[in-house]
Amino acid sequence: MEAKTFGVVTSISMVLALTVAVLSLVAVAITGLYPGIIVLLLVALIPIASKFYAKKIISKSNDFQRNYYTILTIINLLSILVVLWMTFVIVHDRVLQDCC
Image 1 (cartoon, rainbow, N blue to C red):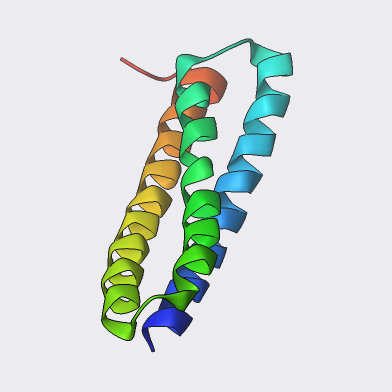
Image 2 (cartoon, one colour; image 1 turned 135 degrees about the vertical axis):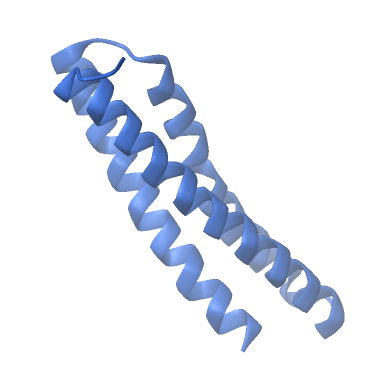
């Protein structure tokens, strides 16, 4: 169950983060560089790195895998929240320009 949940959450996180990262690169061409975009690009590396690490620990014991699947699932869930929040903030600041 842990591996399946981890796989689903990581896939969602990866698709969301990479989509936002690509759209951010397009937005740089239109509106100019925004420092939050750099953070978004770095956050996009989290699900990719966790997917590779999950392949690396496949030969470890089940307890070891379960601990890391749980930790990596939580980290990927947090990265989803960060990406959604930063997307909201960047859109309001750069596109809608209704900040403060």
